[in-house]
Image 1 (cartoon, rainbow, N blue to C red):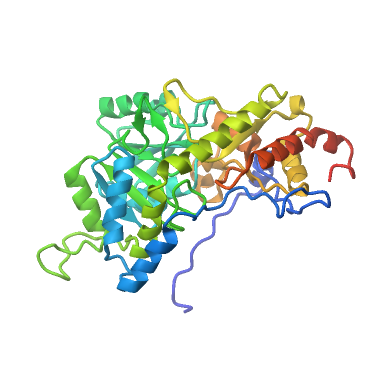
Image 2 (cartoon, rainbow, N blue to C red):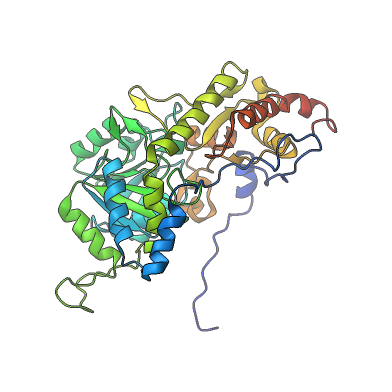
Length: 417
């Protein structure tokens, strides 16, 4: 064991952490329900809804003894979900991260290449780029939706750029037309990270069909879930065949245990796909629930001083996977973390927005001295409110009242809980 190399932990230089600490969220507050809490349990930020045919399909997997990656539910799920994403091909994977890595690897990205990604997104996005050996290059976001800014993306391009990855932050599609045009003009691959955007649409076209390939996540808190899982969607049959082959150790279709590529074990199990197919059968219902929740929050928080809910771009139908609100402390009366602590004391679970990538310990050394102001602003002010499919109108009312009460609680310590 001692002879094995150790993973090196990332660290900050002395004084560097103190310089960026105001941009970072405080530790998670303790969630507790107060004595007058009107519901049976605290309100979770999100959860999975499994009240369709999930149990029936899982029982079929077990009865037929097809529980690994071979089984009809995998192909049925791929076809059904790809159709909902407006694409001809789906490649099911073990997670959203492996789907994105596989999408990049199947495009031939590797050492010496650069891929532009938003500075404000889930850490899986730059990591997937780095897994190929390519270098993730950060670009700032636009303030309206928190998505990759086309002008910033163009400014980040170099002669080494090979691709752009555009995330659909919290279920709001980016300016995909401008980003796709930029990619075409510069001869770059354009990959859509649709992990958070099942069912979102831009100009009538569904998320997952807006780039050369799309990558979805089916993690437990996603709109369509398999517990863990992901999928690539594309209309390119040749690319889909290569991605499907690389997903399965790159086994040769001619002879077994013969490998012409360095592949991966990124397969989805038949059990996961059974759940995914049952979820996809209720695609419209599950998407509509998130939209209803998002619009309910918008209606209740509209006009509240110091609170801003992101506005969709023209022609966009977002899905409000997570309901984010930006807290302007001077106007609202308390900062995002104080509001979050008050909500936790009232039995409401929340999350902070993403911490920008250039502030992350594993990327800090390469980006020290660089600033991405809009990403930093969203990271400092963004608050994610409960957004799950079991959320009720009464719970949304309660969450909004508790949030709007946070400034008073901050002014009167000891009375806020």
